[in-house]
Length: 322
Ligand code: TXA
Ligand code: MG
Image 1 (cartoon, rainbow, N blue to C red):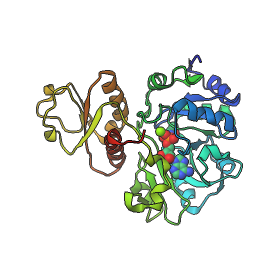
Image 2 (cartoon, rainbow, N blue to C red):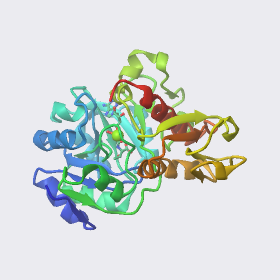
Image 3 (cartoon, helix red, strand yellow):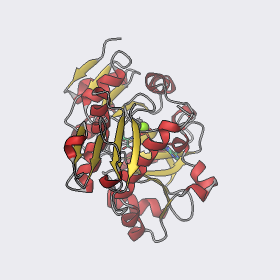
């Protein structure tokens, strides 16, 4: 299959309207979209990514009116989040509309819904004239793509179209918050922090491993995620790195002897760190770097999402699941 790279949202939308798939930029990461009521097209998304079929997809909408096409009920908590943060890097999990095919949500009776804050994404979604399910546009298990070139590197020849835009602004995937339970639970931290959500709906909190049933609500957390080929080692400070030769480092604080690393990426803020992380993983892979040291950051704001992704990338290396 030839992969067309286009700058035209209308051209990319034509693929989706005709029952195929197209990758597109959002403010978080690039997504791989298919029309939500077309089970055959959704199957192509899972195949192109080699994504496990038990991992549900997020419905992307162009206008808040479309929520009613994909969800059967919008509780008060979700109403507040939508009002405050749509369009933006937030996914609300709601009860699924019965007409949404089971393959979209991996058989769950809930569905994640998100309205991207990105002009090209919005023009594309409007031109699709339907809500669009879209996971991140990477091969399953790889870091999410923050450039169209990263999409091409993973999916060239496996998808018919990439809508090319700029590098994504946020760099990490959306915050996912389950609003189907009495007190909302954040299943995946992102740029919209748990604190921001808790201001609107008191009690909203981040899922923890011991949440048992609740953590099973986020099937994606069972799979290997966000990982480069390199081994990822999480450190609190660069001083913890004993033998940097040949290794890479990304973080906020400079190592004492940066020249002893193969590469060092210093970020001036957590926002810059979020923006850089997945692209850095891919750069390290291209340079065949064997080990990437990632510095933990304070857990406020987007810091919780950075720490989550680097911990998952580190755990993924040792995980038997792929
Ligand atoms: O920023 C984003 O959310 C990007 C862009 C493309 O919008 N999309 C994205 O999709 O990251 P994906 O499929 O790579 O990750 C979706 C996450 C997975 O962890 C999945 O398990 C979870 O959201 N999820 C989706 N639907 C869910 C549901 N109904 N209940 C619980 N978790 C759900
Ligand atoms: Mg993903």
